[in-house]
Amino acid sequence: MTSGSRTDGWQTVSDGPFVGWQTWVGDPYEDKLGPYCFRTDEAGNTRGAFVPEAQHANGGGIVHGGALMSFADATLGALLYIELSGQFAVTVTLNSEFVGAGVVGSPINATGRIVRDTKSLAFVHGHLEQDDKPIFMFSSVMKKITPR
View 1 (cartoon, rainbow, N blue to C red):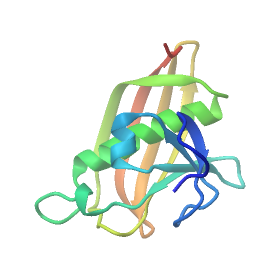
View 2: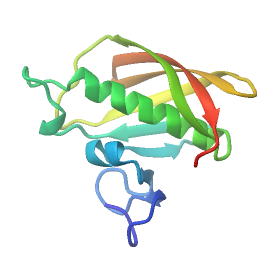
View 3: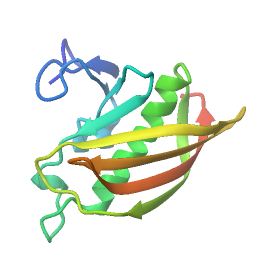
């Protein structure tokens, strides 16, 4: 799905529905659940997307809430990294509201915005939607870090 040999960091998606988008490779958890793909739209906003598969479903056949929370969390990290010029961050809080059900096989899209940015913290709001319908809303406090 990505171009070139595997190295940790951002890679350009070379096939599938998100050709030309970027995906982060090197987070073992996200590598297993994704790929999660990100791009900056024409207005300068960070957008994310992924296509849930059968492995993302719960016993009722809809996308598991934990899969939505994981994608939202990955979106937070990507948003800060992209919009704050390479800033890494970890999640301090993740508040969530499930407002709809996600289905397997149809892309889930993410949007978010930084509400406040301080020296050590960033406050972010966002939502996930599928087929132009909101399914998940979130807010978060992110702690800026320097990776090891």
